[in-house]
Image (cartoon, rainbow, N blue to C red; front, side, top):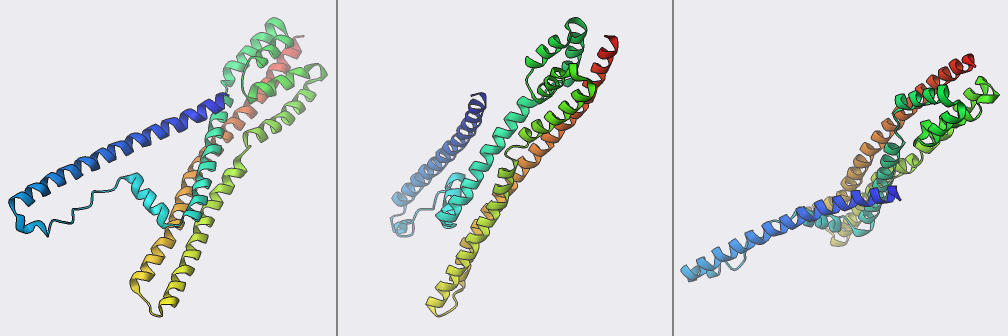
Length: 272
């Protein structure tokens, strides 16, 4: 539930920010259109002879969302929809992974100190209770090692290594899907470009003559899908690299903390 609420909160903030920008753009466009209308009415009343020249009003500048919508339609709804879905699903997985990794981060120095104090005061069971009350993969690995303390230090070490591999797999969950969307978005864009080029040449063949405007317009529309796919891939690649670096940091912390735990257990075993 915490992941779901955090996910909805992030998208809510993004939607609110975009709506605010869109509202400001629309207000600016409305103000400019009103000013132009007043100016044109004044010009018509003062110079009736110039009415014919002022019949066509100047176009109001489009907002960012309207420009994106226009390009989306120009690129073709079918392939642009697939590219957009790749962006949505990829971002959803990236945000879920980032939230999970942030929750998985643990202050290992404090945890090791608490475990050492618990071992000295209440023994292994007290240390296991500390691990149960601590969130994150490091505490889970420590618990598995402490649970097999009676079987010897070597068994504890093997248990820590084995369960560490399990936790590493949980941390890397979903990365293959992000990689898929990173590769899929440009390929969908290229496919839309190729199909758009084919349609452009079909139009040229149907016309019987080569028209520069027809060729340029067809190529421009075809390349929109490629640009969109590359933009989606770049965005997802940035998130992917951040997630990978975050996982590497957690794994390094787990390995270092596991070695420190074994040292603490060896010292505790020698005191017994």
